Structures are given as C-alpha cells and as structure tokens.
Image (cartoon, rainbow, N blue to C red):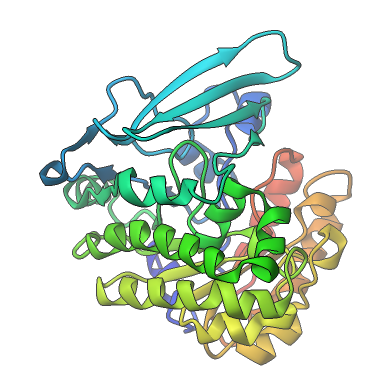
Length: 384
C-alpha cells in the first residue's frame, strides 16, 4: 500500500498492510535544533514515517466586506488572517520582558478588544485574555469575520501532494490564538478557570458564548464541500477530563461538537476529535458525537489516563484510534530497544483488526534521532 492508502484504510477501521506510523505535527524548533534546513517532507522521508500534509487554507467572504489582512504574515500552521473594516487587528511588541511579548488590538466600531501573547523558541501562550467582560462576546458576535475554506487552493495543494500521504486540515480557531474546538476557543479567550466557574454561575452565558463561536466555525465547515482533505481536526485539551468533569463535557462540549461533526459529514469531510489529556471517562461520549477518528490517547506516564487495550475494546469498532505512544519516555533518554518494545505494546493493545494509527500523544519538542528511527522502523515491522 501507499502511505495514503494505508492511512485511509485505517481511518475506515479496516486492516492495512502494516501499522501506519506518523506524528502529530513536526515542530519547527525540533528541526531547527537537530536538522537545520530540513522540511516536514524531508523529516518524513529521513525517518520513514507515513507522511502528513497539514493545510489551513481560508479565504475572505468578499460579499460580507471581508479581505485578507495586508499586514499579517502567517506563522506556523496559521492561515492568512481575514479581517474587515469593522474587525481590524493591530499588534505591538512590548519590550523589556523575559519572553517575546505582543499585544493584539482587535478594533471594532464599538470597542477595542485586547489580548497579550508571549512566546519562546518552542511555543506561545496567552497572558491577557481577550474576553474581559461578559458583554465582549456580543462584540465578537456582531463584528468578527467568518472565514471560508479556500477550496480551490486546498485542491491545488492536494494535486501537488498526490498520493504521498494524508492531507489533514483544521476547523479554524479564533483569530490570533485559537484552536479547532468551541470550548477550546472559549477557554483561550476567557480563561479555563473562569469558564469552568461560569458553567455553574451563569450557564446561559456560557452557552451563548459557545453558540457564537460555533456559528463562526459552522460557516467555514459548510464551505468545505468538495475540498479534498482526508480528515479535519476538531477539539482541544481543555475539554479533557484532566481539566473538566465528564458532566461539563456532556453539557457544554459534546452538543456543539456533535453539530459541527454532523455538518462536516454533510460537507463530505472526515473528522478526528483531539483530546490531549484524560479521556477514559468520556470515551463513549466522544464516540457518540460521531467522529471518524479519535486522538491522542495520552498514557498515564505523561499525565493522561489512556488504557489503549480498554479503549480498543470499548470504542475500537466505532472510530479509528490515533496516538497512544509515550514520546516523553521513549523518544528521549532510553535504549532503542525500549522504544521498540513500546511500539510493539501499542500495536498489541490497539492494532488488532486495523483501525489504529501509531503516533506520539500530541507533538514533541525534543527527541533523540536514533529513537525516532527505532520508533518508525519497528512500526514498519508491525505487519498484519
């Protein structure tokens, strides 16, 4: 099989020729440290992974007066930003701080919303939340742009990529700093502790907030018809059971994600639901939302709770499982034989009958190249 055939067979919960092996994003800081000048494609070829092309192509709705931000240079996995005369985004660098710090001002006719991000060589994080008053969500509802999928550009890139491997996209996150899920975006914009408290103190406001975010994502998903993605990502770690209770998940996460997944299926798209954290108490709840695949199955040794064998037993006939590998303990600081044993253990626990893609539990920031080679080589030996 080609890598693409192998991926698609697993996503259909069928048995490929061998275990598909890949990773969740190739981080630029890792390549810069170990392989300066190496591209994602070079990385996959070098180590013998089944490759992924990540695309995040969006376009403005010109009929709504939207256009590409002329001052925005997209960052890692970031699409070109869509703005309008009523939703302009300006940034300013703040000097004298330990980390690179940027304040973003979102300018609307009624109010300017502000958010502050900091970054190091590996990642970025929010230090000032955008939503500071509950009424700020009304500003978002009235003025935020609603980017659409650039189907033509997606399909052009897919044609260039050919059958090399999987083409993976995203449900767009919020401007500046967001992720695919509604709950995840809300946690970023308001703060996860504040959002959890609001589910008890003002649940109607939380639902209104999530509905606003969902409408924005729905517009994008509805425009994805005929885009030749193999799968698109939804979700985020703030909806894991190491962060929120199963009841909050059922009340405030699942209803919105289920509707987005249904809409994606109507547009002809497969969906992978991403949970980096605890997921065992809500496995069936996630499967009930209707995704085609689930990730990341983070093991307890990394702060998650995944039991691959139990997960396979409970939901393996309903979704493709992706992940489950402990990259912290088996990509650094161990003998290659231990890495190979960890691969075999994952295959034994989740590989039976197909429907499983081996990958690290989310991305990794560092790894011993020798162990990456052992990881991929042993996976290629896991033949059905």
